[in-house]
Length: 184
Image (cartoon, rainbow, N blue to C red; front, side, top):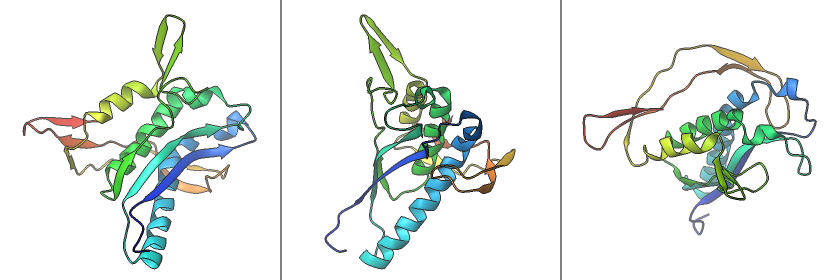
């Protein structure tokens, strides 16, 4: 344990191979909760085996619908942007994260934040949100309390049955100039 510098994790959800679109609705809201649960379990293992919490790097994350051969268009949709934004909120709120790398910036089937065709560059829905959240990097986070609707999800893929999954979240940061507050 003392020889380990940091931990690397990947997180995709719902990671379901059935591809039943109707059953997948709402699972993106549960992903951040499952991520937080997984990170908590990983930290417990670190304490047990290393005697301390190691810095964490998330080197892949995102939605994953379908199987490796037949990837769903949902992977590059606004649904994916919502999932990734909520997941980044979780990482930003936890000082044990070193960094997070989105799986792909350019093209790469359905995973890239930007796609190209001859003479054309097109951002996918996650790209503008990623740019917005990048502006918050290094700024002091402010406590946010969100009171809004929630719902339950049925188990599917790597998402267990969960109750009270929030449908809203936000993150706020104090700008380095002192007077600005940035909210996403």
